[in-house]
Image (cartoon, rainbow, N blue to C red; front, side, top):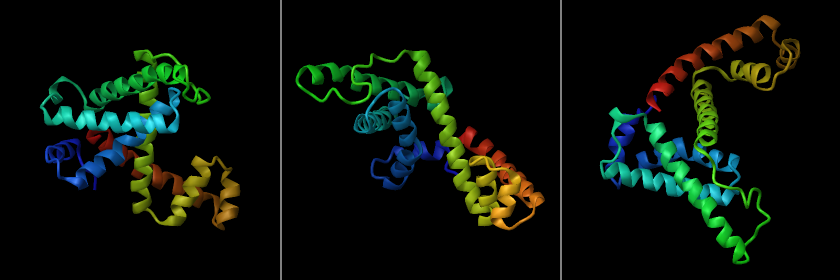
Length: 195
């Protein structure tokens, strides 16, 4: 069901393995983009930083620079992503001075300190893991159960309103929540260890 970091990384050693490269990008690209956006990059800048970070990561990994016994993959990826985000931020003043567009949000923002970068990374990482958990749970539970959960938990509707809208009883709403959360806990455990 879930591709572990080990199998994902082994696949990245083969530069022609487009399937695992796509999975790698699908897994980590949104996190890097979200971090870049939260730190003041425009959407295109965040996209650029993400692409540069993922390529730098793959090249470093293929060169044997990642050592799992010295830290988690996400910590290493954070370091690379942070450097690429800072690179984009450093390029900004030169572009603005040369007549570039300085109307972008955070166009003159300074470089981000390690603590802020780490905090933003952790928040976005957790969001990505929860999103991935929800995607896996959607495959395991029936749509009505998932919809009851979404309305109650994600959209914060009152249980009575959910029950009335879905034409089920209030107890069924809470059972749906319980079922989905049980699946999410299990998947979250796997993702936390495998991501």
